[in-house]
Length: 330
Ligand SMILES: Nc1ncnc2c1ncn2[C@@H]1O[C@H](COP(=O)(O)OP(=O)(O)O)[C@@H](O)[C@H]1O
Ligand SMILES: [Mg+2]
Image (cartoon, rainbow, N blue to C red; front, side):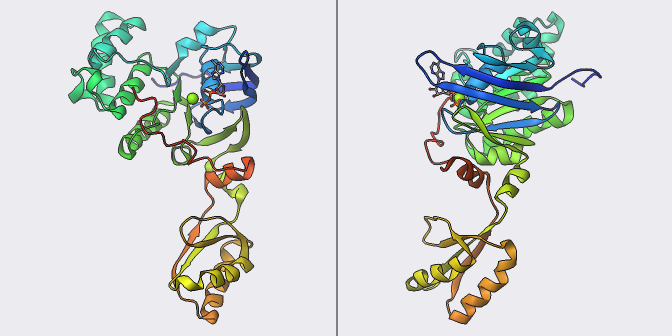
């Protein structure tokens, strides 16, 4: 699966729009470029337009306006060429509960036109790669959500795609299955130069896995950059303190508010976004000392992608149905 010179593994979209009849403008003018070998995280809440974008980029849904190309091929004019270079694990990907992983592989390698003598070895290699060797001859109906996602990923890799689309690959998975899928995906990009476009509702997933993140809300990209760039737009960290004596909380809040603007926190603590950043810490500690207020804890919080989302949209990304465990798992 090594890349040959001249192969263009990029993804490009310009003014991409999708309107549904009697529905919303699900995708409302998206411009993006994903470089070869890059992992691009498309981060946004439910209904933001993530899946609709993926369906257009994978040629499964025609755009209403704009254009896009994948691997150098136009998604409208050159559908077959696009499909030959991409792999996709989409949300509705249907696995047959009555078939085993090995049987799914046999079907997929045949569908993809692999030569007869390569089908079994390729299938076994991929099953092994996603850690399903032990379960390979068990019916998929008995698999956990994480095992199904890993099989989905293996099936998408059969024809050695140069560009891989993953629509919410870890929604509903437990943290351990999630990290093991992240490892798999970063390995594909790092070792084999596969370009990855993945959608997610999870801040942590975008932060840890993606080289670059596009934040999508209501069909539009509201921010884009590396996780570090996005967070540095917010710039200053916040400091969160709690007092030993509950009764002195108000006093502490008043004192702390001299150093920055308050941020809502639900933890019985008080928090402010620091006006001058980390340099304020010494002053804060001295002021609390001078006022004789004993601290139970003092935590410095670096900006998160949720702070970025909040700054751009006025609301938090997580906590609004983003954790519907089990969604899309079957
Ligand atoms: N086939 C469709 N017909 C009408 N509206 C749709 C259709 N598919 C998606 N939508 C709407 O388009 C918006 C974006 O949906 P979607 O791309 O699935 O968002 P996401 O994947 O980010 O959750 C939502 O408001 C959704 O209800
Ligand atoms: Mg979706």
